[in-house]
Length: 111
Image 1 (cartoon, rainbow, N blue to C red):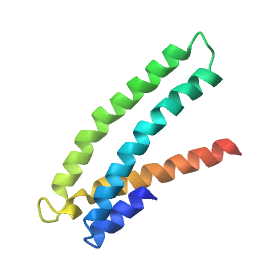
Image 2: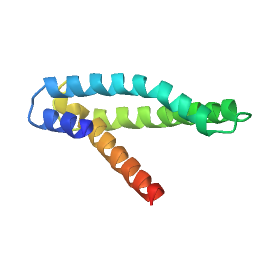
Image 3: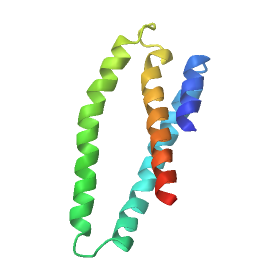
Image 4: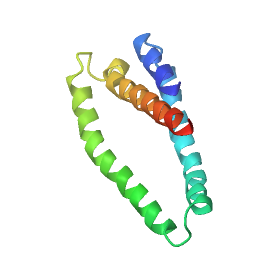
């Protein structure tokens, strides 16, 4: 939903929507981290919790190391005016795709 808000704000040139959207995403990700850690601690095997959290953190770091240059390249190749909100459209589209993928995975796991 937030990525869609960001995309619509960019498309309709309502600059405040992407700004609010990205700030909201940052806040929510920082709030989610302690919940994520406590979930692993409560549900996981007590002897492997540290290893599991380490693997999760390394996976996140590697995915960022791969995706950040790719998204940067896509932003650079976007045929919009440089430094305009529309130039960040690939980031919003990428977010929508990953959110939809996460939703499908969650829905498949809950069945």
